[in-house]
Length: 422
Image: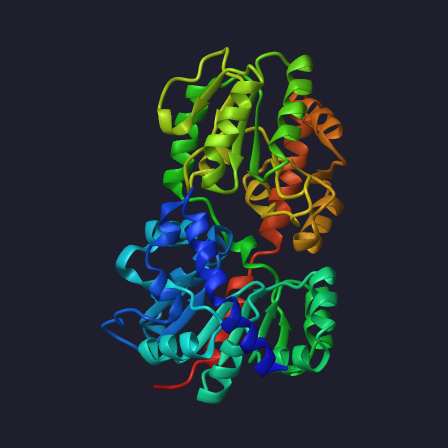
């Protein structure tokens, strides 16, 4: 089966490269540095450290506390961090610059994986969240490179999909050296798919350990004054195709109850910024884009967050938040970021990627799950019109986050246990 998987990759390679070219129509960075995805690049000056793979912006944000701690630990140096997307690459460089060595993650072809490993020679590989690559795991096992899946999560839907591959799935999951699982349910799914139970530990989510930078808090204060300290403000974070229309419908309902309310709309992918701006204008709504750096007036209905890495700043300046990827069947995004800032959080019915965390917030009465645009509008109008309710729900969320910190330390223990001595 592994040979068949590799053969499929060989056949699909031209399509994978063509897809990069296609995506570069909207994001030119996709056509740059493509050789890195084949394992071809100038090796780092120093090798033999820890390799961390974080797919895109969300995983980079989740791994940020871990990377900071590893940078402060001489035994884990040097650090190589890979991403799959240009947006993840840009965010990584913004956060860490030349403190880390960064290239794109190799395609899961033996030649690309071997080329990467030959150049970097890592002593430990840390994969963030859901990255399961058969040839990479097999190559690391063959070379004696320990592997750890940090912040590991596996939805019931994904587990069922992997299970269809039977023995091949069990061999692949059995090659994972360790799993720091976000929840007991995640841990059970990893074990059921073939990871030995003594390699799996429930550590919780490192997203509980993320903290807002003091500079970001200051920027939030400045931004809120510019938006209007007394007007109701809500953020729709990480929205996807087909979701922006629903959010705008919800905002229309909010404005009927609270004229002058401001929606801060932050699409998940930068290639969609122009399309979302055009959508807002077609609705006849007064729009200000973050990149325009123009004033937000009382007539402004929508503020478009068309930059990368500023979502925490926008959340810190808002009264309530909706987290996208949940009104459409994507699986949701990080709901802890607004909760940690003391905001009540709404999300849609599709939260299978963050099911355990979503349930924790609901049980703590820190969030509300909505069915559609109509119920989203109702929830936001209720929250924005009731400061005491917002405060109560927001404090519930903040306490939940504080009480669940510690996943980072537990994950670092698993890193130390697996890191070979020099």
